[in-house]
Length: 275
Image 1 (cartoon, one colour):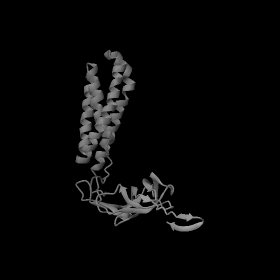
Image 2 (cartoon, rainbow, N blue to C red; image 1 turned 120 degrees about the vertical axis):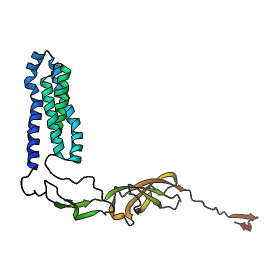
Image 3 (spheres, rainbow, N blue to C red; image 1 turned 180 degrees about the horizontal axis):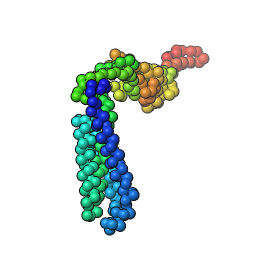
Image 4 (cartoon, rainbow, N blue to C red; image 1 turned 180 degrees about the vertical axis):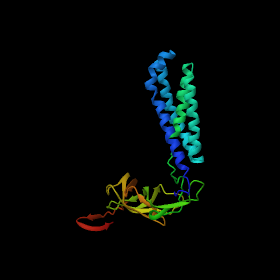
């Protein structure tokens, strides 16, 4: 983003944020230096005083989620200001604490929450979030994403763009095959090929050839479909996770009709034959 004419107030926010970060983390880490004097002077156990440091880091980690959300909505100024006030209150309160729980609250909770503001983004960089692209096909786009900023009291208007790559979505095929009567071959017929992972009403189908594990008669014989390929209006937006799939089908026994010949004779003479 471009800087407006005159004094750039954004650097004040950055400087205050950096100073607060140093003070906050310096205060947190200084407990190791003052652990023994505090324990001796106040009559508190070292484990109790050390627990404040643990609370400190836990509070900082949890508070960072809140401060980050606040920074996205209202900017870093309110975050830095709030953190500075909490940091001051925590340091003053910890210095005046007369019981261990008070020290743990002021030094652990308040200073930890204040330090959480230091892990938010105070760089002044604008980001593009929660973007939804609908109806865009898979492919490479040289100027796929662009963003613009109208400007405010501290920054002038700015815009920019970046390339975008939309990858094909992988889908998983599953097939069914028809039963057949024994014909001496292992060939099979795919009756349906369905795809798992297709979005909405996209028109995508698949097809391929199939064979039985063997040509012999059997129930629930393994059928393997291979060479599966996608087709349909939206096929270019998808890719198969595998080009083979298996199912089962039956090869039934082939019915046959018997034919017999019967011959009769008397005294060595053939009288008739019957089939």
